[in-house]
Every structure is written in structure tokens, then in C-alpha cells.
Image 1 (cartoon, rainbow, N blue to C red):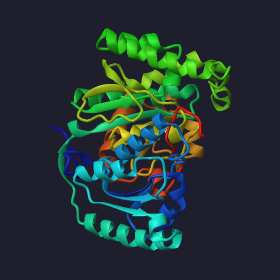
Image 2 (image 1 turned 180 degrees about the horizontal axis):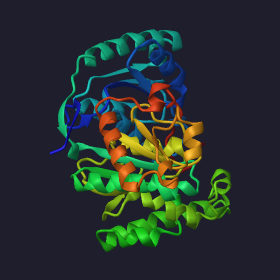
Image 3 (image 1 turned 60 degrees about the vertical axis):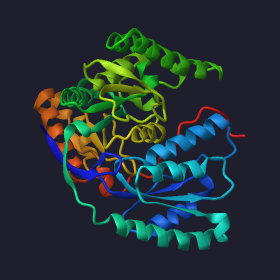
Length: 388
């Protein structure tokens, strides 16, 4: 049995962090929520741009995502900041998180008489929550209780040759230890979806892989565009990637080699599922990191070649850099230099074991570099319809 020390939650999850999450239920409450967070130690906020003037399916999607973020194992308590007239189901948001056993408070800006009074009330309640969870202690937990999320961004040719290979090594190791791994970026399956489908545990799962790729391409076509007009990105092209197919072949390497158990929707949580899973997400960081944190992942392994420094408020993001030159330039943002594979100084397995040792330290409390400098404010929720 391989262990780490984490925070045991009332619902059975185990967290690697112990944050008070401040959740604005609508974009209109962001400024009040930010003012509260700045004043109270131990708080982080989910500052999204959704929650009103959207069609019902998207309002449900936003509500479900905020609930999943509040249920994160890395969150010890929650303060919900509501305006009072938003389209999200702020009552269900409160009731579902409270049912998990976590301390939860909620304030309404309109009922309290405006922003300044809501800020004062929110500071008082956030302070109470922060003090209440400050005495929680880390206790032993088996590594099989972990969910690792995977992402690549700012990719170049070294991503598929080094950093993605290291993360694939870790993915296989964690699956073999009984843990859970989830990867996404449906846009970066295009041209390689048949390779992923071969690893599906059933024909139904293989069908789901083809389905989400087709749906992603259909959404682009509905606007008169081909996906290839936006992928690969200008940075990818400058980094040597010639086509979406080439990018996809490198991107899927980070999933490792184990069988794919199923496909999750954007708001779905792992809820005890084991093994390797796909989550249907876009590739852009603010939306995919939110979706991955909503699975209940305690941390993320993030592969990059050109350098992508941002993280996520409640989910440590370990940056694995495949380009040795980028690592030297951005070493205050990159957590691990996988560029040594490119230079011949180390093998994939050797760097993979270093990455595994690092993730254990992060689970036990070591800060990632983006956590240390607070680079994790840009999040958002992936919605499907128009703002109306």
C-alpha cells in the first residue's frame, strides 16, 4: 500500500489542500467575492463569467459545475456569494454542498443592502469558516483514493516527445496502483480518435469517443468554420507542429497505455470510478482546468513545451516542461524539466520516477510554482449556447 497524508472529508474523499472556497453564483457577484477573499486568509475564489442571461441547459450546466467545484476534496468549507436574482439555482448549490457535510455559508448582496454591506457580512462568515477548518490535520490515506487530471498546453514538438511521455508514464503507474486518471481536450483527439477507440473497454465506449469528436467538429461547422482554422494554434505552429493530426498524436501520449473505461460529460464527477477516463472538454485552459477540478481531482499534471504558467485556485497544477530552453527561461513557473529527455541526459522512466516523487510531495502539501505566486485566477465554465 502506498500512502500520502491528506484531509479526510465527511463524504469519504481525501484532499491534498484545505481551502475555503468562495463561490460567486453569478458573474455579478465576482467583485464582492474577490473583496472577501482578499481580506481572509485561507480563501480562494472561483471567478467565472456565467450565471445569468443564458438558456436553461447552460444555467443547469453552470450550477452543476459550481456544485462539483464546491465538493472538491481540496475544499474544506464554502462561502457562496449570490446576487439574489441570478439564473443559476443558488439554493440547490447550497443544499447539495451542505449535504456533503462541509461547513457552508451563503450571503445575498441584494438582501444585505448592497456591495459594501455584503462584503462586511462575507468577511465575517469567511473568517468563521477559515478558523473552523484551520485545525484540520492531515492523516494517512491510500494512493488509490487519488484522481489525477491531465492537460497539455503551449505545446511544441518536445511535448509529444518528452513531457507528454512522462505524464503517460505516471498515468499508467497510478492506474496500476488502483487510482483514477482523467484526460480531455476533445479537440486534440481529432485525427487520432481511432487510436484511442482501440483502447476502449467496450464498443459503447469507443462509440462515445467518436461521438464527442464528431460533436466538437459539428459545433465548429455550425459557425461555418473548420476546426483546423483554429488548431493548431499560432504558438503550436511556431513550435513546429504542422497539423491538428500531428498535434493530436503527441497529445494522446499523455494518457498512457491503459484501457479507457468511459467518457464523462463536462460537469460529471469521478464519484469512485477507477482507472483511466476521458472527460469531454475543450482545450483552452480556463475551461478545461475548471472541468478537471470538477471531477474531484486532487491535482493536475500539465505538459508544456513553449511554457504555460497558470494554475487553478483549488487544484495544484504540476508543470512538466519538455523543452529544455523553455525550462531555463521559465524555471520559476515550471516544476519539472523533462527537457533532459531531449538532450539525452535522462530517460522517460527516470524523469517519470522524478515526477512521481514530486506528485507525492505535492499531495503531502508542497506548493507548486503557480501556487506559490498565486497564478491561478483565470478560470471559466465551458457553456454551449449564447448569452441572451
